[in-house]
Image (cartoon, rainbow, N blue to C red; front, side, top):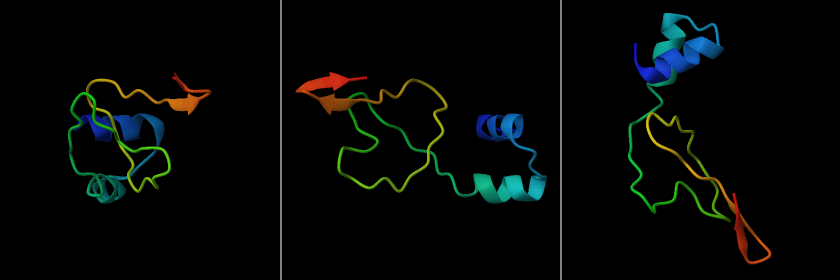
Length: 67
């Protein structure tokens, strides 16, 4: 069982058939340091699962980045 499957199982009662359908919708990708998952004003068409590392979420307010 992958980390994604363990995470889904810990929160939802999912059958194996449905788990296969759900996990087939995910593809592995990597963000390098300094890259953006999405930017302000862009429509995000992705759902993600962070396997390792951190993602910082912030907004610009009064010329400052607010985490």
